[in-house]
Amino acid sequence: MTSDPKPVGVAVLGYGNVGSEVVRIIESSAADLTARIGAPLVLRGIGVRRVNANRGVPIELLTDDIDELVTRDDVDIVVELMGPVEPSRKAILSAIEHGKSVVTANKALLAGSTGELARAAERAHVDLYFEASVAGAIPVIRPLTQSLAGDSVLRVIGIVNGTTNYILSEMETTGADYASALADASTLGYAEADPTADVDGYDAASKAAILASIAFHTTVTADDVYREGITAITTEDFASAQALNCTIKLLALCERIVDEDGREMVSARVYPALVPAAHPLATVGGAFNAVVVEAEAAGRLMFYGQGAGGAPTASAVTGDIVMAARNRVQGGRGPRESKYAQLPIAPIGKVSTRYYVSMDVADRSGVLSAVAAEFANHGVSIAEVRQEGVVADSGERVGARIVVVTHRATEAALADTITALEELDVVANVASVLRLEGTDP
Ligand code: NAP
Image (tube, rainbow, N blue to C red; front, side, top):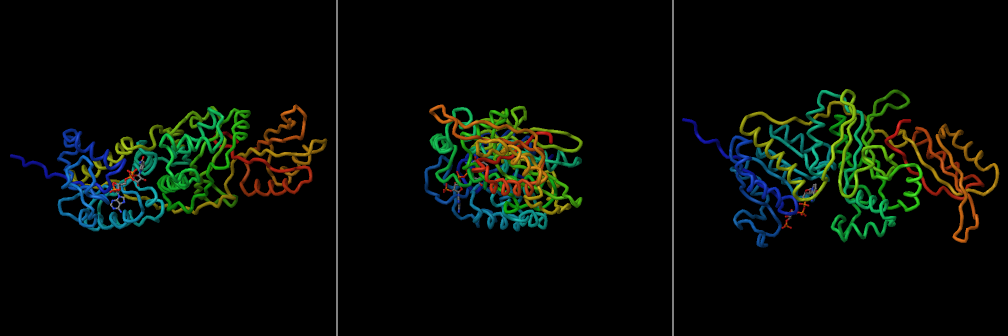
């Protein structure tokens, strides 16, 4: 006679957008999850700040004593869905030290540390899973750590922040300016009361750090990620993008690059960029996310879906819980952190890409050649140039504008070119500089 398998005890820290959905899935899919794991998954407790609120779960499951919950003997897996770096970090470390496996969606915590949690999990021989920390429901951590473990990743380019993608999509499709598109996003609940983390690119930078660390087996923190947000994007930028058959997206880019001395480096950066209409990321609209991975043997892979929201994120979290529970029941552990390469982080000046530069210039002959000479002087090759008249509402021609699209050049060379252009008598001002990503050189 075989005995019933021992249940796997779960503690969920946080009962907000994601935590409540995880609890719902654990309860509503109990029979299926038991079959998939090989043992019942039993919810032992839910950690919150306010226990007495009416939350639709038995009150005896709720506790504000996180320290006690994560160390309970009948808890095998701790699921951290609280959000702030503290007390989440402390709770996770305590859980790990007490032999619990951990699942978390906390990108800020993961991207802010140099692997403290992973090292603790390693020492304690427990699992640490974090699929939901990047792009919500979209499986991207597991494909990078497991499916592509035999390949070499060259580049990861993603739209990993739904709020900014919604704002940029609104600007493009309705002609709205940044402020009204942001107001619209707030009304619809896509933007938080303080949108800084999204619109200034901090959220995307945390995700870029996590993706770059995994893709290139290197410690990359959010501070290593070069970051520009979308607050300076104008309706004129969208008009220019349209003229070039492009759109504008906030991209998280993680790349293995080789510098002029032949040194391999990792570049991780977040900025708004022109993306050609034919690129798969150009059609990712609204609050959706997508991640394109380019690997040496696999070529280009694309992952697309809902990058946030309670239920979609809970799908990824519950997938991790099932993995950790299976490991408990069957023995064994999930993949350990792999940081063997430890490549240096490339400063932004060493990164090379293509650029779109538009400038207001004097409306007279010889200007175009003076401008072109500055690009040549700094080794930045021009792919396309256009000079057009600036016409006032009255129909009168009041000035001229030159638009240049370059071939690939380093950020350092481009920065020097812009400085030199701004010093030219014939250039009134450099109106806009945008990177152009997702094209061949
Ligand atoms: P949320 O709705 O704000 O919920 C947070 C929950 O954590 C609440 O139940 C809160 O308790 C509890 N909590 C916060 N601080 C606590 C503390 N000091 N002690 C005890 N409990 C505490 O957050 P969420 O949107 O579900 O996000 C949870 C995590 O998932 C975050 O790390 C977030 O970055 C990540 N994530 C979220 C999404 C998404 O779409 N929402 C997507 C991907 C990843 P009270 O209820 O008592 O206030």
